[in-house]
Image 1 (cartoon, rainbow, N blue to C red):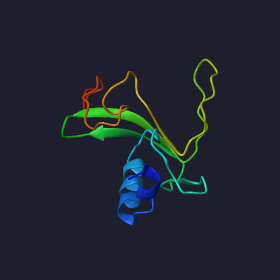
Image 2 (cartoon, helix red, strand yellow):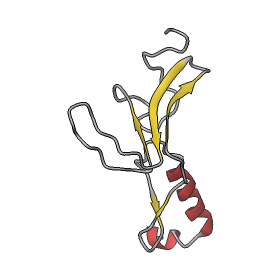
Image 3 (cartoon, rainbow, N blue to C red):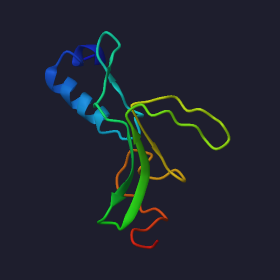
Image 4 (cartoon, rainbow, N blue to C red):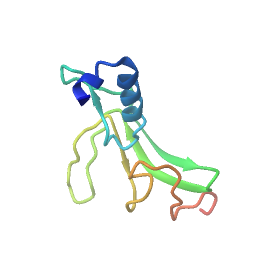
Length: 107
């Protein structure tokens, strides 16, 4: 069965939308058949994701279409959601709970 026919199945469609919406980095985005993105609605905000169980800080989670410019002047594509890490890790690859060097409670 082709992928297009599967998108007409409400169960598969819902699963795909949920999976894409759970991608904090915004690397996965679901689109309807007209090409419109199906995205969670976010108020503009920035937060440091935390994993208290692992006592670790995760990536910086920027949401709500906030413009981002690097220190050297590079302007990133404006997106509804994006994460920034100091180095590639399991968070930025879509897998949860990677211990990073910034430990909670260690200043």
